[in-house]
Image 1 (cartoon, one colour):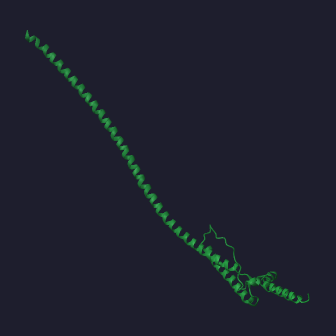
Image 2 (image 1 turned 180 degrees about the horizontal axis):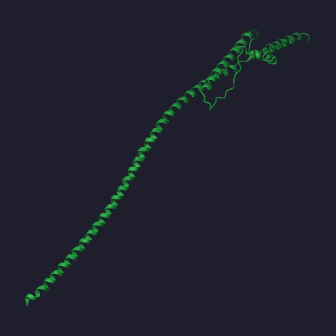
Image 3 (image 1 turned 90 degrees about the horizontal axis):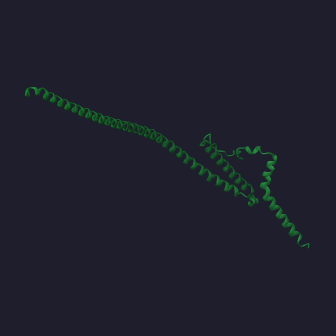
Length: 210
C-alpha cells in the first residue's frame, strides 16, 4: 500500500518544483524589467549630459571666436583712432597758431589811422603802413596754403584768396578811380590840416576888422 502512494507524492513534488520555478522566473523577469528601466533612465541622463556638454562646447567655441574677432577689430581701431587723434591735435594746434597770427595782424591793421599821422612824415608813415599790410598778406597766404595742404578733399578749408601786394607789382592793376580813392585816403590828413590852418588864418585875420 505505501508503495502505491509514492507516484502521487512524486507528482506533488514536481508540481511544487514547477511552482517555485515559475515564481523564480517571474522574479527574474521583473528584475530584468527593472534593470532595463534603470538602464533607460541612465541612458536618458547620459544623453542629457551629452547635449549639455555639446552646448557648453559650442558656446565656448563661440566665446573664443567672438573674443578673437573683437580683440582684432578693437586693436586695429585703436591704432586708427590714435592716428586720427594725433592728426586732429596737430590740426588743432595749427588752427590755434593761425588764429593767433591772424588776430595779431588784424589788431595791427586796425590800429593804422592816417588821421593821426604827422603830415611831415606822410611818406614814412605811408611806407610803414604798406609794409604792415604786405606782411599781413604774406602771412595770410602762407597760413592759408598750409591749412589747405593739411585738409582733405571732403572737408575743404574755405578761406578767401588774396591779391598780391604792392611790392610785387600787382598794384599796377588798380583802375584810375581806385588810385584816386587811395590817394584821397592818404591825403585826407593833409587836407584836414590845411583846412584847419586856413580857418585859423581867416579867423585871426578877420578879428581886428571887427
